[in-house]
Image 1 (cartoon, helix red, strand yellow):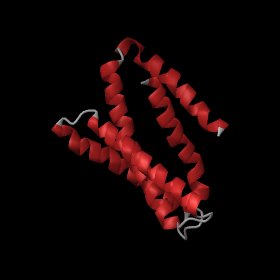
Image 2: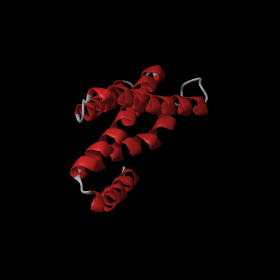
Image 3: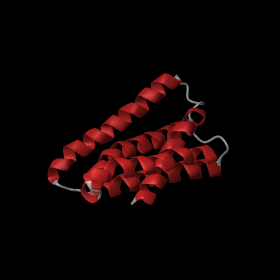
Image 4: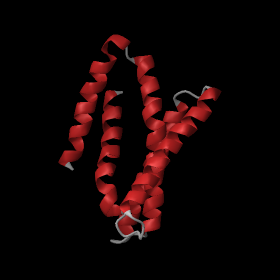
Length: 139
């Protein structure tokens, strides 16, 4: 579970470093793009909150992971097909990644609270977070 957390969060943190040059060709200011990304993150969390009353549990985590994988795949294919991919498609994929992150973080926190005992939860989460944060620097 820790390895999965580390890999997923490292890819999200790497995206945080990569999105400004990726979306530079849009005629929209970077601050507006950032606001759109944060709105998408909040929309993901709000979506999780609204579907959590149906007791879907870890299935929402799987949906978030599949959505993020699809968005990363779209970005990879766009970069492979063209050195200058259409910026609007890149923006849509970036919004999908942030939406999935908005679902992922609360879902994973809930799953962690079920699996890991409370007495060691903070220590274990911080240990994996240290590994996670250091990975994007090696990309």
